[in-house]
Length: 408
Image (cartoon, rainbow, N blue to C red; front, side, top):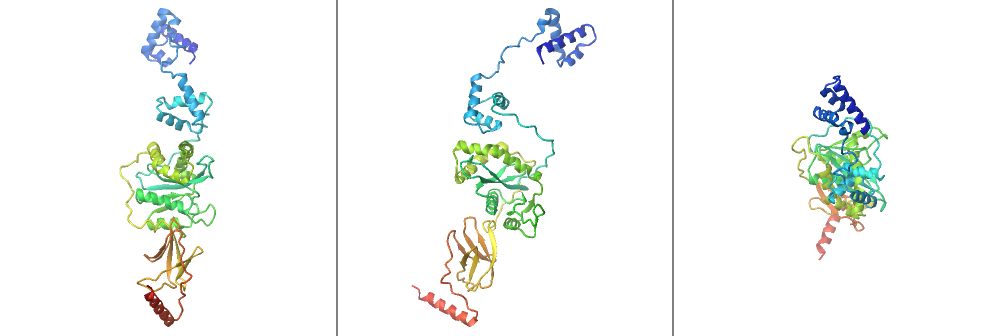
């Protein structure tokens, strides 16, 4: 309120009290003061006139005013080093350097010097979906394509697995492109560190679901590799049909896009491998400490996993063994070696497992027949074709065993 207007209202209220049109209590309520303070003003006015009611602090600098040199230093830090930070992120960076002033003061310095503009007004209030009561009941996974390295390399995807109950990031890493391999990696890192969870909420990307019609419902009778793996693990896979359902995940990506590229720039990180190691060791723990919340209930819904996770979170394809006891897979010919319990697998149904590192393995039921390390091609040039005659096959088997017996 302007000083002159304040003075006029006080004098008018004092006059009404003297004329007994108002009590001191009513006059104090009218001015927004306590009754005791109004009585002080009334007595001062009666003794010294209007001059006695003037606030003596007018024109004096505040006792807690920050020195102009400090404000100049803060503005210079933002202008030269933290120019792409948000106001909140910038304030947290200054606190690490020992600045003890409030976030409101930091923001006002940036606003008054034209370094930041006030944010746009938010939309109408909408009621948020209640969080899960325990960690491990519902997990989100999604990828975000963004200029994470601020133009120093081609944009890549950040794959994040998020817990709904706490908002904590359970797994985060950079990948050239989101897909089946990145989904498997996020699941593996989460299960190995925390355990099995109940349900998994994702969008309807082609690596998560088969969708016969664009924008339509998913076909749960034809699971993808990710869907097949989740079924083997006993995890319910929930498709998202509206962007509002992924709002919690999108808000996390908004926070990450406003902080992570700037932190990578300050750390001088420019490669995916170095960035992934830094994410796991430094950024994710500090992010969870800052933004994760306490669950509504004590305990956890994560369960320890005991099993062969490697042979679940991999690509599995069924093949029929050819007459040469070989399997064709993705342009490669995989030779099945002789087994102690069975001489050949001609016409048998087998599974080919492709692992994230590029390695391959052939399974017959639960038994692994052979494994090929990454980059190793099967040698099939000398593999004999199995004849159709049983007698011929028997003679050929005897010849092969005799040849092996003659080897040194």
